[in-house]
Each structure stands twice: as structure tokens, then as C-alpha cells.
Image (tube, rainbow, N blue to C red):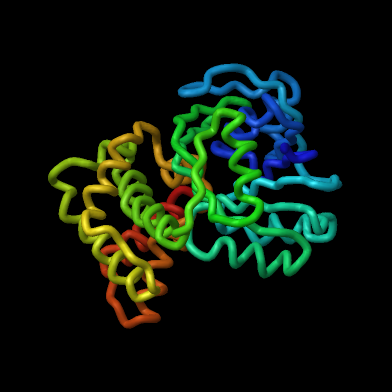
Amino acid sequence: MSFNKIFILGAGAIGSAFGALLSRRNDVTLIGRKDHVDVVNKSGLTLLGDAKGKFFVEAETAIREVPSDSLIFLTTKAYDAASAVTGIKSIIRNDTVILVLPNGLGIKDIAEKVVEDRAEVVRGLVTSAAEFFEPGKISFWQGETVLESTQTSERIARVLSESGLKTVISNEMQEEIWRKLTVNCVLNPLTTILQVKNNEILLESLKEIRHEIIRECIDVGKAEGTRFERNLEECVERKIGRYTNYSSMYQDIMKRKKTEIDFLNGKIVELGRKHSIPAPVNEALVGLIKFLEVQRK
């Protein structure tokens, strides 16, 4: 059974791609920046890559009313999650479901703290990739969406799958979150600093740096009660090798925008300090990305 209404709150690269594909079978509204919204409403949304086509989907700059039985995809940047959910708190309903998809640790907690008991919050992870360098045009590479196991997850998974978006439900969401976090801690800052596409950081000369980032993530994650597979380095590098796009962090720097570094490598440093575990490589990457943020302003 579909939802009466689907909103994509934060229609950037991934959000716009998901909204376009979901609009094939659902009533979808993209919520994004005015320049993007204007192009989509005038000329449609063009998808390139694994899902080519032009999609005529409704787009607005804000959610003004939430109908009954609505599903809201939260696809903002991690640092905008709290303000985005706060902006809709007064209009969500008891039967509203918010699917939280931003990168990083603690995003579901942020949303639940704002929402309180007004709506259901479900955590999800996206391994698909997307690029957004021009309003109304998105390049998309299909991965999969991982949902935590809840009563509503089966229903969300069906909606995604029926729209051509590969979806799985996991009973080990903490491990899934930390695995994705580790991939992002390697991929995002290195591609941004070196100004290359994701799979280009797999050079042998960067192997020790990649593996040290991963080792620090494992040490901190274990202290937080997370279990990791033995060959995590190989798993991370296999995943990175599939991505031929520019990382979201590199795209942010190119657009002179703030990055999600505080929710990625910054979280490793923060939690490392909590457990008295040093994370010098992740800390160095945070400093370098912060420098680029200031330099690009």
C-alpha cells in the first residue's frame, strides 16, 4: 500500500533523484531551493546515469500542509536536519512517517528530539550516488537503500522497490550505519582534498592513509558497542571502487557550501575523545576540510 503523499524534504542530488523515480507511481512533491524548484516546475527534472529521462514532478520551496498518511524523506545535509524538521513540526500528524537519510551519526536522534511523539521516525541509509551541478539536472548511480527494521519499514521498502529503487531491511542498523560512516570518512575528505572522483583514491600510495582512517573508525566504533567484520578494509575499498562520481563533500566545496565533516570524521574525533582514543588522521582531515570551507567562501 502506497502513502497518500510523499515529500522529499531537501531535494538536492539524492533527494531529487529519489523524488523523480518515486513520482512514477506516487504523488510526490520535491522541497528544495528556489532556483532548482523553478527549473523543475518550468522544464521538468532531467535524470542522467542509471535512470535516464525527464520527470515532471511537483516542486515547492516549503511544505505548507501535510495530508494524512504522508511519508517525508529527509534528504537535507546533516547539519540542516534539525532546522528542517523543526520547520514542519507544527504541521506533521500522528500518522506521518519521516525517513531520515542524511549521512553521519546521530541524525535519527536529532530528528526524534525535535519531533518528540508527533510522528514516527525511521532511519535509512543510501548507497546510491548522485551529482548536482546544475538546477533541474541530476546524474544518478543506483545503489541500495537500507532501512532499519520497524513496523513501517516493509511498507516503505515496497514503495521504493516498486519505483525501481533497490531496498533492504536490516536488523543490524548500528553496524550498517558505522560501515557507511567508515566509507564516508575515507571517501569524502580524501576526494575533496585531492579534487578527484571517488574511485581515484584507490591508488597504492594512499593505502596506508585509507587503512589508518578505517582503523581509527573501528577503534572508536568498538568503544561505542559496534561490531565490525574482519576484512573491513577490503569491504570499504570494494565499495569505493564502484563509485565513479564526485563525492558529495567535493560537490559542496565546489559550490562554496558547508560540508558534513562534523558528522563524519568530526564524529570519530569527538567520540574518540569521549573514550580517550586518539584519532589523529581523522582529526587532520577535519582540519584540512575546515580550511577548504573557509578558503572557498
